[in-house]
Image 1 (tube, helix red, strand yellow):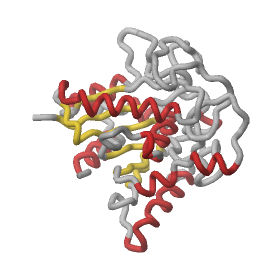
Image 2 (image 1 turned 135 degrees about the vertical axis):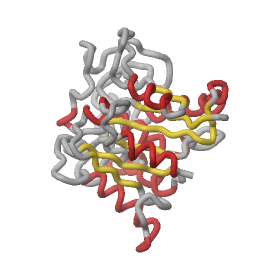
Image 3 (image 1 turned 135 degrees about the horizontal axis):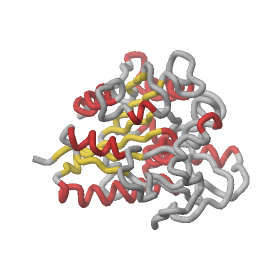
Amino acid sequence: MARRALFFVPGGGGNKIEQQAREANAFYDNIGRWATENGMVGVLMQRHPGTNWDDGGKDISLMIQWMQNNISKYKGDPDRMFIWAHSAGNGPLGVYIGHPELHGPKGVGVKGAVFMSGNPVPGLGGPAGGAGGGARGGGPALAAAGSTCGVAAGSTEGLISGPSGAPPAGPRGAGGGRGGAPQPDAATLAARSNLSGFKTTKVAVLLARAELDPGVTGTMAAADIALHDELCNEDGPKAKDGVGHCPTMLFLKGESHMSEVFSIGTPDKTVSGPILAWMKKVK
């Protein structure tokens, strides 16, 4: 029987996922193992810098289209695919979900998307780049998150081909990509916004936030709440979390920006338990 598939988009600066060819690398590999142990086909995406604001979204599009055509070779079900992003990985995934023009001929390709500790729609809930989010997925407080194994953010080590295969040309623009051009004007930023695509997508959305994330003060981040409210408003006064456009909210008590990742595949089910249960419920 074909199995559910789970794609994971990593956080951290520079080229990811852990392309440094280190033996016995634990970081993010635990998620692939956890997916396998729970009857899924696990796919860890390599994320790397690009020159244009939508390059990361285009990379995700290429991955999903390839999986739509090939996941069955690995006993995966192309009609039961999910995607999960952490930290800076929320930027490119937000661009992909929010821009239907990036979807391939077979459509968006995923049933559900988990956005964990990042902001997939920059500008909501405060200025882009603030404590709750920003184009990068975590704001200045998380600028160094995910720099591991001595490989600096922006490194070209392990670079692979693809729309974002070129080294970054300069400061990051809006929407999760990198670009060398000056900050775009308001009209350009509005055209690049992910929000309209989120309002129309049929992909189930789960917003997860660690209690000990930088800038979090006892509840979901302002960016999470703002996106939740925008999407729930599409369903009117009877909107219910996890139904229709209204996202599921998951506040991860006792977890930090990094422990939420490392906990997956361990006896700590704070993160993995609710997310697995949510995936099983999504139609």
